[in-house]
Length: 399
Image 1 (cartoon, helix red, strand yellow):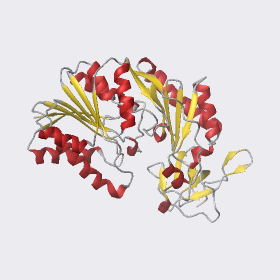
Image 2 (cartoon, helix red, strand yellow):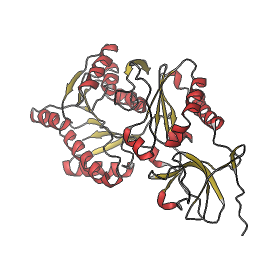
Image 3 (tube, one colour):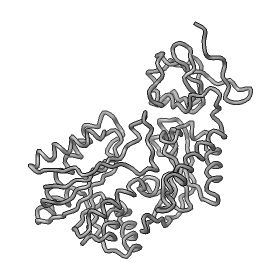
Image 4 (cartoon, helix red, strand yellow):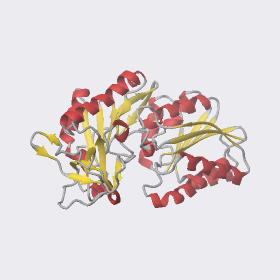
């Protein structure tokens, strides 16, 4: 059989390195693990653009290679005539921005939204969030880091006058073998969401500065919590509690371990003219004490940080979700609401709902699931990358 591959080019006079798959089937996912490919004879630097061929020497696609990472290949495109270069980067970023501005019309409701959602926008290894005039760029892949100048130029073209802050977490740099020298951390900036004011603090260790993914869930919870006594557990910057009080909740308490983020939460409450009692504590200790006092809250949010990045520890994460939710039920009276969330991408929606079934059985309570939601539409999910639908937000009524 004659090969279908004929020395494809990514740029004039440049022949790309070739990586061959062990299978003759097209990968059903843009991530290809090291066990699925033949190790190249010559060393290929991490983050290099390569051509990918199947076991029958047929062209599969083009993407980033990293022989040191768990994800050896990040497939970017299947068009052999399409070069992965600065123009390609600019076109993908332009497409992502147009989606948010023209189709979703996000600027009507907020100036805090996700500009690029990695695989969801065909830019594997890149996250970009907008907070007013600041663009926060997070790198997850050596290949994207190599294109940083093109990325920053493309963002500047789409957001004239915007300030850029970029970073990569240390564990990512180690896994992907690149050295990201972060920009100077900008001062906190005020952002707006459904008519409310919040502080976004890039570089302060809380995601990229603000949890914009929960924007629509905050508003929905506020609608349901009107007239109720609210408890916001793992409250972070207090978004749910502030929305609830602005929407007519009777009172609200927020609990978090991080003293620094609670200062921001208090500032958020003050900026919106609402009163929220924010307390620094471990939620398990706080809940046990509250239950012992006979405290009851008829609208509870449970929104912990990601519990694991390790697939082998998913069972342990589910056990912790079980413990949190089981204890929270003891503070909810019959007819009360529970919004329970998971941003652990390795925990599937099915497993999270099964955990809730077991919580209800253990507590002898009936849990009615009203809605299961995720991140906002500015976090699009590719059909072949279910992992990028990381957020589960389950709205429940507890009997």
